[in-house]
Image (spheres, helix red, strand yellow):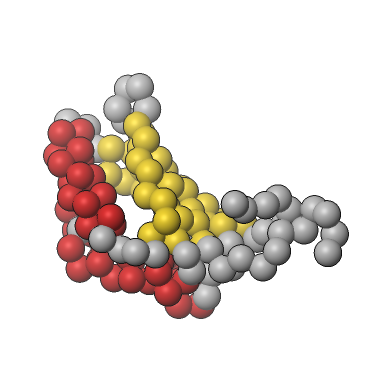
Length: 125
């Protein structure tokens, strides 16, 4: 194996950038708390980190899953429990998906018009 090659890894992760709709930051924070608590119960959700810009207008959500199946479990829960409120409070601006998503994952994320990035080099611990 080339020293810059990543060993085969099934994890998939993405960064979602959102614009929070005007005057909705408090409702958005409340929804985020519910979504984090829900994701905490998903054993193969490895990371679920939300960050906010200083002006409280932009949010980044970093999500990492053990594999495509774990992402699909999360996506189904999101759709059933949170999607309507989430999209009323924030507008997705950009989604960048890292890893090797299956066709099913690509279909689930298609509404967000993601950019896909394939592994090139590095390591995972």
